[in-house]
Amino acid sequence: MSVLEKFKRIKENDRVLLIWNEQRRIRGNLDFKKVSDEEYVQKLYQDAFKKTLDLTNPQTFNEKLQWLKLNYRDSLMTQCADKYGVRQYLEDKGYGYLLNELIAQYESVDDINLEELPDRFVLKGTHGSGWNLIVHQKDQINWPVWKKIMKSWMKQNLYFYGREWVYRDIKPRIICEKYLEDSSGELRDYKVFCFNGEPRMIQVDLGRFSNHRRNLYDPQWNLMPFRINYENSETEVEKPNSLQSMIRIAGELSKDFPHVRADFYDVNGKLYFGELTFFHESGTGKFEPEEYDRIIGDWLTLPPKITGE
Image: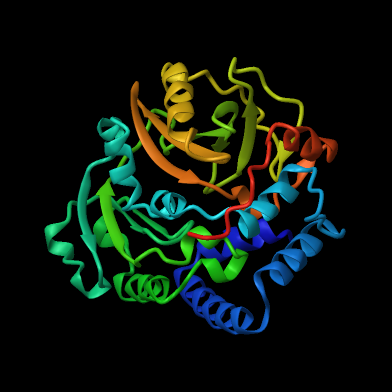
């Protein structure tokens, strides 16, 4: 069983997910005290690709992401990795209209009053990745267990697990947003990869909660000849009507950064902003064919080092 398949099974069982979160938190705290950032990313890369990470002359996309973790630190990236703080960045850029409705934000899980919430909503940990609870029916959730899971989120620092420094100083919060669903019956997201301010690739994930598939397109919506971690979908993905708007806005949002992935949703023709991500798959995404790790790496020109924040 692959690591991705194992994690999918963990997420399907809330009690197992709680135990996994607590074990990860304890292990992450111990590793952080024992291992430097450079030692950690070297091992992370070695474990993923079975070869040594070249930080002196990085060439591949994944190598360059690891280099950026260690050598490029701008506090604006911390604001934008924060799922609450990024809302202000969107407002400042004139794209506040793309934000999903914010129902509430909490600094303690104990402050969540379920009676005040609608039947369907989404809870997100603002200081992490994948810390989401999608609520289709409020009365179908095992709230005692899920509140413990969210309390575990609040005690974790995602920086410890991949040395993605952008998460280190984010204030832990839980936000509640309006439930969204598109015509596919789920919420298909469109992830626009931007390199030095230029949108170059769009990732579409399908069946994330069943049979996960992933397609990669160029900006003209041509399927690209490689994969990252998942097989292509067997069904054709229709080009979203908002594609050109996504690409234009992603380009504007990316101008402040050497590399960022801007995520969007298209819900019945209405465009919503998702998030900004700086280290896709934490720099361990497996390309097939492998040569495309180098080809995509050529798209990214690394900036001068900035280690102060």
